[in-house]
Amino acid sequence: MRKGVYAFALAPFFFVGCAEEPTTVTTTTTTQEVTTTGPGTRPVAREVVVTQPPPAVRVEAQTVSPGPAYAWTRGYWRWTGAGYEWVPGTWVTRPSPRNVWVEGHWVRRAGGWVWIAGHWQ
Image (cartoon, rainbow, N blue to C red; front, side):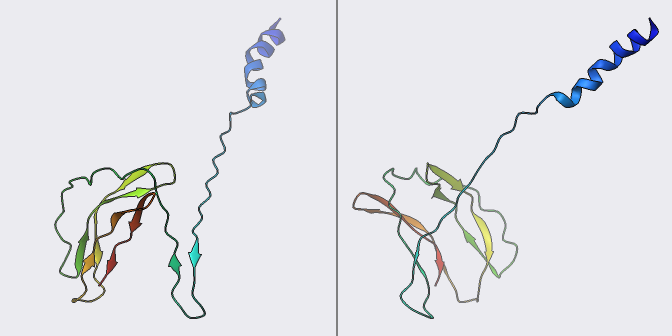
């Protein structure tokens, strides 16, 4: 009788390893099409035309600068391939005191919208 009670009490521990955990597999593929004009030249990213217009730019609070060598880059809407995602503004180190950050922006083109990336000038 006692052995039967112990067997009954220990049975759930025996079957714990038999249950299969549900698994989720997420695959992310990132591609970037690049065109070059020859050896030693800078690659030029191919334009992606988005048929949905970007949302209005968010008004965000600019935090206090970490120092004089930094420039604020405003947030922007990034196209993910399926929709827009907000990228918040941030402070970045200025390459030289004379450099000025030119904000990235969306431009209307035939068939949709194209992102022009921000850059130093």
